[in-house]
Amino acid sequence: MVAIFILILWTTFLFAKELKIQEAIDLALKNSPIIKASQRDVKAQELELKAAKGALFPRIKLEETYTRTDVPAYAFMSKLNQERITLQDFDPAKLNNPPAINNFETKISLEVPIWLGGKIQSAKRMAEHEYKAVSLEASRKEEEVIRQVYHTYVDVALAKEAVEVSKQAVEDAKEHLRLAEQMHKVGMGLLSDVLRAQVYLSKAQENLEKAERNYSVAKRGLEVVIGLRLGDFEVEGLKACPQVNVEGLKEKAVQRRDIKAMEERLRTLQEAYSFALSDNLPHIYAFGQYFLNSKDHPFGSDGKGYMVGLGFSWAFDTGLTTLRKAQANLERRYGLEERIRLIKDMALLDVEKAYAEYKNALDMLRSAEDRIKASKEVLRVIELRYKNGLARMVDILDAQTELDKARLERIQAINACHKAYADLLFGAGLIEEVKR
Image (tube, rainbow, N blue to C red; front, side):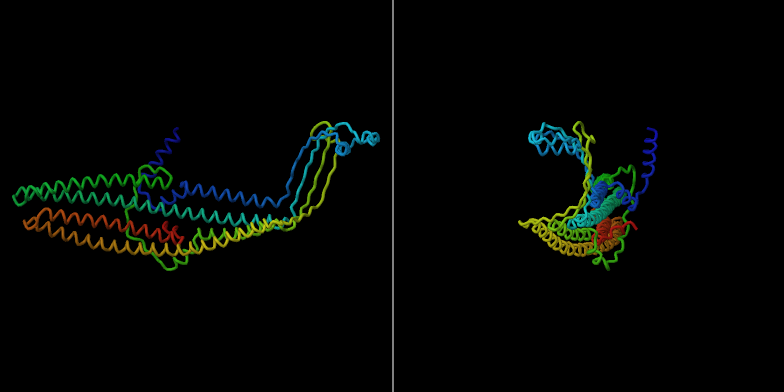
C-alpha cells in the first residue's frame, strides 16, 4: 500500500506540469488500446508464420489400438504379430475357427514430407507476406493514433487559449464598466450605459465559465485518447502554424504503409494460387513406423517390429475443383489490384485536400490577425470619443465584441492549421514528423 501511495504521489507530481505534444504522443504509443490490439495481431501472425515453417519438420504420432476378434485372418495376424504362433495354430480347424483373441497394438510413426507439390513452401511464403502486411497495418495504426493524439492535443490547446481569450474579455468588460460608471458619476454618461456594461460583463463571465468547463472536458478527452489518467496537467498554448514542405509528399503518399500492406496481400494471393494448384501435383513423403503388440495390456511388447518406406501419390481432380479454387484466388488478386489503384488515387487526393485546408487556415489566420489590429485601433478611437462625449457605450461594446471575435477566430485558425498539417503528413505517411 505504501508503494502504491508513493507511486500515486510521484505520478501526480510528474504530470502536475505542462504536458508537451511529444510527451502525449509517446504516452499514447505505450498505452493506447488500439496499438496494444494491433500488437496482438502482429504476434498472432508471427505465430502463424512459425506454424507454417513447422510443417517442414517431421511429424511424430503415437497410437494405441485395442481389438478383439475371431475373424480367422485377423485373429491369425494378431497372434502372429504377438509372436505367439506355434505348430498347433496351423491346424485347419483352428485356422478356420479360431477363438477370440485380444490385441493391444502400440504404433509410433514418423512422417517426413519430401515434396507435397510445393504446398508447404507456398504456405510458408503466404504466412511471410501476411506477417509483413499485418506489421505494416500495425504501423499505420500507430500513425492513426499519433494523428488522433495530435488533433486532440491541439483541441485542448484551443480550449486553453479560449479560456485566456475569455479572461481578457472579462478584464476588458470590467474596464468598460468602470469607464461607464466614471462617466455616469461626472454626468457625461447615461445609466443605461452602466447597465449595458454590466450585462456585457455578466455575459463575458458566463463565457469564461463555459470555456473553463470546455477546457476540463477537452483534457479528459486527451486522457481517453492516450489511454492513461494524467492527473493534474496543462498543455502548451497554440503556437504559429508549422511550416510545410509539400514537395515530394505526393510521391510519399503512394508508398504509405497501408498501401504497402495491400501490396503484400497481392503477393499472398499469388502464393494462394500456387498453394491451391499443389493439390494437383505429385506428393512424395517418407515414413517410419515401430510396432508393439500384446495380448494382455497396452504398450506391451510380446511382439515388435518396424516398417520404413517412401510414399508417392498423385491425385487428379476430374471435377476441376482445385483449378477453380486457384482461379478464384487470381480473381481476388485482380480485384485487390483495382482497389490498390483506387487507394493510391485517394491518397493523392487526401494530400491535396489537406494542403488546401492548410492554405485556407493560413488565410484565416492572416485575416484574424489583421482584424485584431484593426479592432484594437477602432476600440481605442471609440473609447477616446466616448470619454469626450462623442460616442455611445453601445459603440464600445460592439467594437469590443468584434475584437473578442477576432481573437477567438485567430486561435481557431491556428487550430485548423495544425490539424491540416497533421492530416497532410498523415496522408503522406509521415505523421511521425510531428514529434520533431
